[in-house]
Length: 445
Image 1 (cartoon, rainbow, N blue to C red):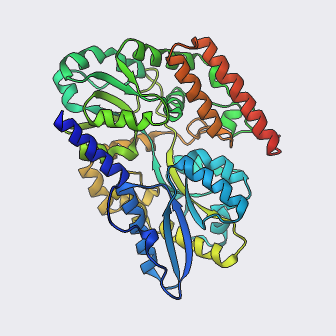
Image 2 (image 1 turned 180 degrees about the horizontal axis):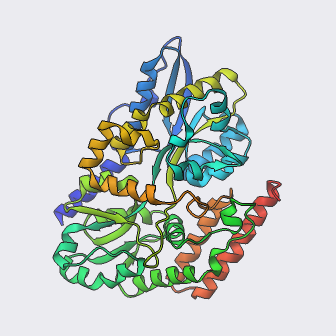
Image 3 (image 1 turned 45 degrees about the horizontal axis):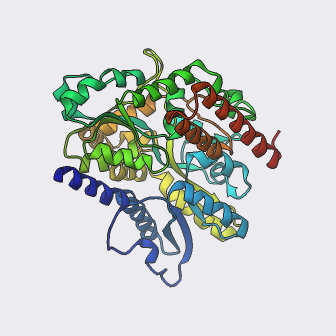
């Protein structure tokens, strides 16, 4: 028990970055420097990496001073951004997760990365990892520069799996097939920890080669309705999910805080396996009192191609109307983007992916991957994913609402308040209403 508590505390410290050290945002701007602000959502080791990047930029020249300012989780930051846009007080550069990409690309408040790049090219854009360039090319332009991309992996307790004498499951249903042995011989309370997070479902859906929205996920035309509720594979994923929970093979940690709760439970050794972002790999391996293993995301059917949806965040620039501020913001984004060493360094410090292909040719990054097979495994999964409209994910500004609808309805289904048919009907009706409202309000047709 003591070991579990210590592991949990260590994970909290690593993830939240509990420290008495002064934050970079508290450092005064030196006299004679023009300040730009950079909103981000990083904590712990990831915060340290962000501050290191800003320090390197500030030391690289003597005219501009970038101040990183933490704004909470991605969802919180997006809410604050929308208010700041309206008030004209948005930051010069900001980090935003993949779910906000469509909204930001169409809101009129940002400068597309492609616009500045075309006037000041400094690299071959094909040096970007293909799935990243594909995901963030919206309206025919690369809208932002990828910063800290992640993907979904299966995390598992290697010690428990070895004690149970079982292989790592390759399919979603296969996770339940090994549950009894894992609980009996592996010493875990639950074989599987599951949290109701829409990104997990979206990845499982993509792994079957299926779209979430019509018009090829809204990438071949305007998305006007969800298509996933009408697919047999959706019924299979949801019913398998519920069967895992009802049978006791899995514990449902729910939505919202459930993501962190399930992570902490895994770190403490209460669960034998779960689905988590690659972003948590450093914290998990550093805190768990057992050997943490990772594997590619379990697919729905044997033989399905690998197709994962990118997570993480990117660098965006605010259209302030002040030419000097916009030039200074571009200087900071360009500083990060133009040197492959920067993205390699950020990856090595955090566990996120390097975004430029040339970073993978650097001796330092090759050595890092050779010494960190879990990181290499995650990167290989990303590189194996096709740059198509399935892996491109759902392209609509209504996606935050659609994900919330899925999560709320899924919780009701898991609780037994809705049948599978009722849950799918709710998801379909509410999601299509949300899409219609979003498209109408924003004049999209």
